[in-house]
Image (tube, rainbow, N blue to C red; front, side):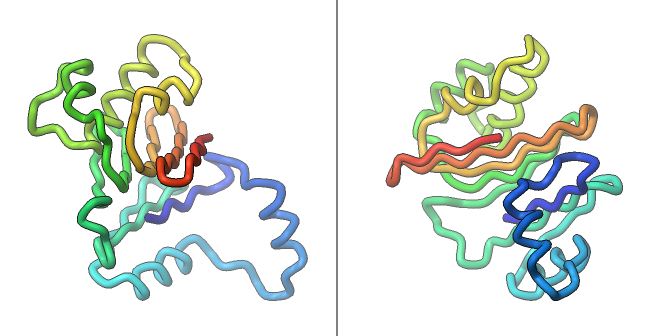
Amino acid sequence: MLGVFSSAIVSPPDELVAAGCRTPSPKITADALVKRFLETNSSGVSMQIGDHVQFAYSHHKESPLQPRSFAVKDEIFCLFEGALDNLGSLKQQYGLAKSANEVILVIEAYKALRDRAPYPPNHVVGHLIGSFAFIVFDKSTSTLFVASVSIQIGLTYFF
């Protein structure tokens, strides 16, 4: 999975900016980065969202237990990889159809919490059980939400 965002959407981490200043080679453009991803990942898919966001993903070397999926609903774009162990109960909680998968659930959970009140990101991730990573981009608000959770190593990361 690859998400490339301009500085109009999110500021890069200071550590990456500082490291990039020390490299003599010219910086790679967003288009070139996505092109390189697609060249090295067979059957890759990419999409550009406005002028500031690009997504790319591939099913190449995908684990059957950790599938990758993409969905868009109401200008909310989501790339998801992994599996939720509590998908069934979450579908009931959010009133989703039995056919809804993880990527749809993440979009609906994000929408519900965004529309009810400005909840912190850990409130969204706190209800999800499993090993997964996702990128959510809300085009209507230019909001980016990224999370990665791995039960195997006990890692939870989001911003």
